[in-house]
Length: 613
Image (cartoon, rainbow, N blue to C red; front, side, top):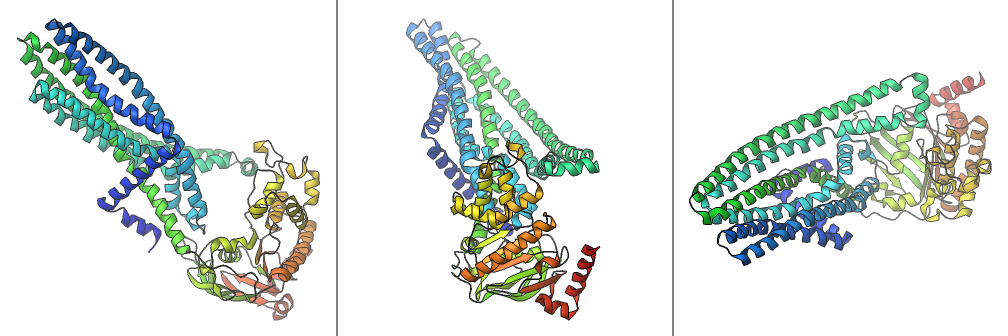
């Protein structure tokens, strides 16, 4: 069963969903307490004081009026002081509590929720989830609304507080006339109507998340220096802006329709409530028409009734927030469940060997990318001997890079096994396996940090080890590049942050240096390592890395795996794998493959002729 289906089932039913929601609210309140006890007590204290103040205002005003009618000076003074104090609390303390609640929710969201979501996405051992729209849509929704996730817990607490205020208020109204309890029934009308409208708004947030993500991606592409050159030469910039505008319009249209429907529902609810309130007030006025002693009841009814409208509005809003926030809690719980399920699939794992004795074996391995039926690697069976230099060649789309992603555990095979000295790679601890793996991928990262850090990230435990960094720079033939930089290894990279811009080939040399930080890995991957380099640099790099491969083999029995579409650069490999359409069609040494006069010999001859011309 997939993580998607497991999570979907866990949220089908109100029972499990309600229990999960309550558990999450308790956790969020605990996080709020841990983040700032002062803010936590300020918000709760303000809520309690504000609840008591609402009732005290009406009682104080009734005491003033009734005391005036009966010439009771003490009642007037006490009522005035009580009402003044209650108004002060209601106006000031409530506002302070609301501001502190917003501050606390934002702090918890930025320091706890957002890091958890990002670390969850990074912490999954494979990368296929980053290619699934179901995952990315939920990730976008949660990141954009992390504050709302925390606020959902406080919305539930405040909803309880507002219910307590309603009970006090209605108790006061009931003391005037039991008929005024009709307002209690009326108070439920806007609650239900606005809840319906807000549910539609929250549903719209989910519905527009894909377009919002597309809009953001197109914006980042439009202002990217890398894409900027192509956009200007091809003239595709206006079309990109048009597509971004279209995505924004679609998202905005969904949002506007939902808001209009919510406004209609809310207006209808408040109209019905107003009619009921006026009817109740008419009853009180009629009863007190011939009894001056009951003038205070009229004041109490008008005051409390007016407050009741505000209380009901707040109760409606926070109750609707509580229900509407489930649209955020569900994807947040989904992301957590997906993360936990993926971690469970990974398991604790075995330690990789300290030294490769046999090597790595692909045993009938087949893999297809998410959303496709065509295998990128099909029934691959081959043994990579320990201590060997293995080259993988083939045309674009032949499955070369996919093979690398499988052996580095970025994807799990759909079928078959990858064995490391006889142990299934799936059973090895992923973090431990990657700690003995080094890789320079075709789509390498560009870290806008100092040059030394951009290299040192290749082995985070040695990120401050300048001797290791200098050796890695030397292995990547990047010493001349460092000498040209204004501050050497301390030079900041990337013009966007005030640093120095380097060329694509120079970025690739930095990536190669980063991959050289670990001195004796069991697996050393070079995926198209010279695609952005000129011919002299390419030749120098391969000479250096062939020497380094022999050193790695001597120290750890490690395998150097070189992926390249340039056949001339891999002739010195111990084993050459020829991929075509996801299948391994040939393998052997350069000499044997040429002698076989088959696919490899044909492609090698074509490239040799092309470069000669």
